[in-house]
Each structure stands twice: as structure tokens, then as C-alpha cells.
Image (cartoon, rainbow, N blue to C red; front, side, top):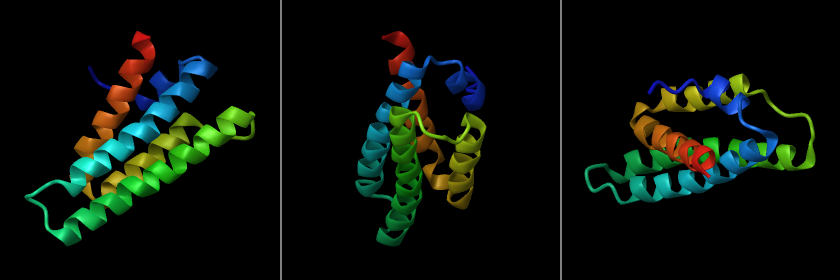
Length: 111
């Protein structure tokens, strides 16, 4: 299944979107653990990958905050462009970030 982030996340209810971003932040921490334990990557590669995922996580937790308080928020398209930008800086994090997105989304729509 192709994952159209902007469309699929926008289609969630407000409660589902909040839950998605909470799960997404959590799953990004799991991704960081995976990066850290990658025996094939050098220490420098691990640090660079972790930095990218951490930047995404920083913005995702900010999004949780504004969703929870009903404040101005970034659109899903803006959020996706941010994610794409960090992934473009280091393609080695793409699989982990995509897995975190898909797992989080799947958990929300199946509950």
C-alpha cells in the first residue's frame, strides 16, 4: 500500500491524529534504539542518523503539544515536508522513519 501521509493523516479524527503523533514519537524512540544497536554502522554514522530522527521527534512532540491545546498547528503537508527533509539529509534513516509512521498509523486505525 502506498502511504500518502498528508491525505491519510488529515483523514483521521482529531483524537486519532493526536494518538497517531503520540505513537509516532514513541516509535521514533524505538527507531533510535535500532540505529544505536546497528553493528554494521560506525559510531559516527549512528550519531548522524540519531540526530536526524531526533529532529523529527522534536517536531512530532511539538505537534502533540499544539494538538492537545488546540493551538495553531502545522498542516500535515508541512509536517510531511519536514519529515522528508530530514530523511533526505540521511537516507539511511528512511526505513526506520517509514516503519514508525506505518506502525503508528496501523495501530491507530485498527483500534
